Image (cartoon, rainbow, N blue to C red; front, side, top):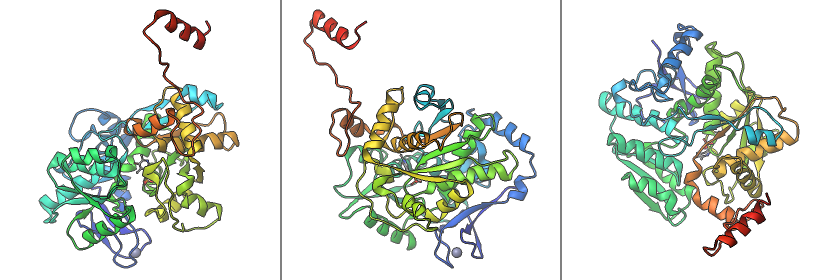
Length: 442
Ligand SMILES: *Cc1c(COP(=O)(O)O)cnc(C)c1O
Ligand SMILES: [Zn+2]
């Protein structure tokens, strides 16, 4: 029987059931990991796993049509199906960005659109696992939870609020007062979360929510909680599945707290450990230059990440100076022969605008990943025939202020070289023809 437990990432003794509210190792206070019984999973042959996963993919048999729960045995095998809280997350499009790839002199550029999900970001993949486990623990294991809580200003709170509301578990979101735009606030507000606006910054909110969790007042949903990574790792499995079980050469990912980078590593590693694949892709962790602690660490040849003060960046979801999952990400880089690359505000905005002109609609974080791709391609690090997957982490539709700001040339530090101005004209046929003629001199 497949099973999974919490264990200390650093290797301290002890293991704990997933239904226990535990976020750190009691011995060393370090991060926890969800460890699977790989021997039990090896009891099923690689071809049999592929057949099972392919049969379930995007169908409606509960809960397996979800991109996460279709891989249930590899994610959280013991959660009863009737405790699962799913909004049909995953199963997102992996499209061949042919025109943009051609511009960069490459034939195999693919974009994995994780933002095409229930709340518009990849955070749904992890949140479905966390909220399902909490619901199961409350129902069957006597876990007392007044509310699930997180400190966040964007995608995490939107996702948590939706999953909590869909099963009736209360949600509390802690936000820094006055530093959150209406667009960032409206999703948790609409889903009925308790929104606490505190007179502090993000780190101040994080400190409060951690204390609330430590005293058992709330259950903690920030990505320190290893449950989220189990759901997020299915992005790796799904990419390989979509390539008919072939491993791409490179995966490029915009990263802040570094949870997702570690999750992707877990997914690719499990595929290899179970014999479904025979290698890992190379990983590129892409960061905003204004919040680039991992890039600095790699540049200095350090094995640990020194926290920095993150400056404000358009890529708000990765404006993090002290990434919680840094130790996990260091392992991922090592195992995947990885690179860390950063992008300035102008580079990320220009990359997003350039990709938009080939039919995409990029959020600023995807812009960071595309900027990293452009640099690595220009340097020849990524070869023209190599298969590259850029992970797009959120929908561009959630970042309207970024898009408008770019085309109205109002973004600080950004040149808006590709701004596309609407042409304002009187309702006069001749003037319209003149304008078309000027733009497209047939
Ligand atoms: C959360 C988030 C990230 C960063 O993921 P980490 O796991 O914190 O590295 C990147 N892009 C978007 C849109 C996000 O919401
Ligand atoms: Zn430990």
